[in-house]
Length: 121
Figure 1 (cartoon, rainbow, N blue to C red):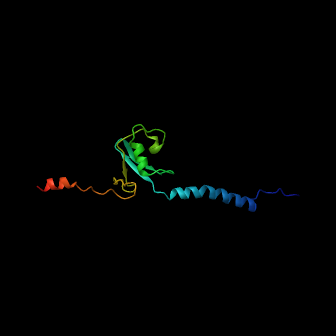
Figure 2: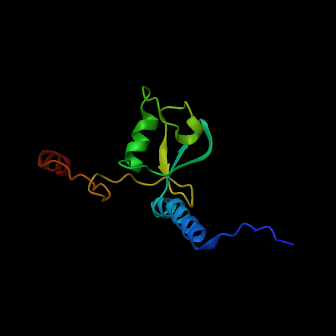
């Protein structure tokens, strides 16, 4: 009596599965290395966590959420809440100071010399 051949992965099947697995895992690992941005709003329950896409920053996402005319993105469960958003620390939920484009925290402005002289009188 002849035995029916059983399906086997074989070397080609294993290599194919490995290639497909890597094609799925590598972009997820690369995207997972980016830091999420977290936002809060009094009119939104909980904290909104967003993973910035290519060309996005936490600042650009915050600007979008605070723009009353913005449409088209699905941040924060596709919320329609616009305005009043603040960036918060994802671990603590406390407000974070916004950074300027250079990546450093904004510095306190020095008073103008005229104001210094007037204040000292």
